[in-house]
Image (cartoon, rainbow, N blue to C red; front, side, top):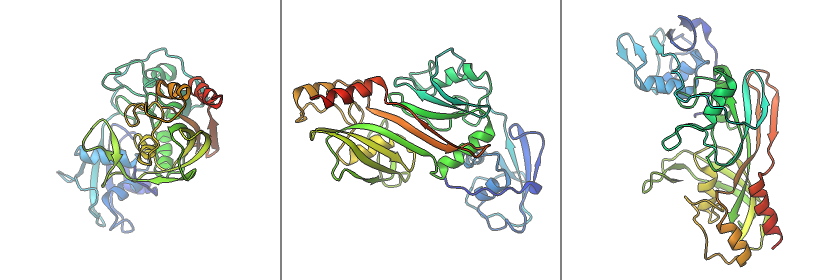
Length: 337
C-alpha cells in the first residue's frame, strides 16, 4: 500500500446507495485540478482504500463518459466528471468452520487473534479450508469486512502458516480502511522474536533492502532491484555460544517473508526455515544444540507485539503474546547447554 493523506470532499460524490454495489458520479473541483487521478479518487471516496481504487481502475470500473480510464497517474482537470462502478463485495467462498480461536481482544469493529503455528490465514492452493478465515466466518457470523476479497474477508495483514503470534482482523469496511491506512503509514507497532543461526555482529542494527519475487525461484522472495522498499530493525536478546541467537525484529514495513529474507541476507537465516535457511548440519554448535536446532519443525518466528490506534475510538491498543511452548522449550534447552 502507498502512503496516503485522505481529504473528504463529500460535495463531489453522489452515491446511489452504499459504498459497495453503487455507481459514484464524481466531479473535479478547482482546488483539486492538477492532482493525480488516484490521489483525487482517494480524496473523493475516503471510504475506499487506495489499493481497492487501483483494483477498480485496473478492472475498467472508472469511466470518463463512455471511455474506461486506465491511467492512475494522469492529472485531473477542473470540471471533469467521472463515474466509478463499485460492484458488491463478492460472497466469501470459504465456508464457516467451528475452529477454536485464541481471541486476545474483540469489539464490534475488530478482533485480535493469537494465531498458533501451523494455521493458514486464508484459503490458498493446498489449503482450501481449515484456515483462520474459515474459523472467523463461523465466529463472526457474517460480520467481516468485504474489502479483503472473496477468500480473505476481514484480513488486513497476514503472517505465514508456520509463524505464530498476533494479527488483527476487521469486522467492517470502515475499520478495514482505517487499519490499512496505519499499515500504509508504517505506524503499526509490530515486533517479532526470531531464533537465527549464528550471532549478528553488530548485535543491533537494521537491514534495508527492496523485496520482490525471486526471479529464479517464484516460491521465494528476495532483495531485488525494483522490489518494494523494506526496513527491519533487529537486536540480539540472547546469544547461545556463537552458533545461534534469539533476536528481536521490529518492522517498519510489512513485505512478504520480510524478516526471513532480511535476516538471511546478512548471513543469519531463521532456525527451522526450510525455504531460506535449510538445516545447518555443518554448524559448529555442540552436538546437543545442533540436534535441537536442526530438528526444530518450523521457522522459529513469533509475532509477539501488535499495537495500533483503534480506527473508530482512536484509543491506542497494544497487545503482547507469550512465546509459544515449542519455541520457549527451544530457548530453555539451548540455555542449558
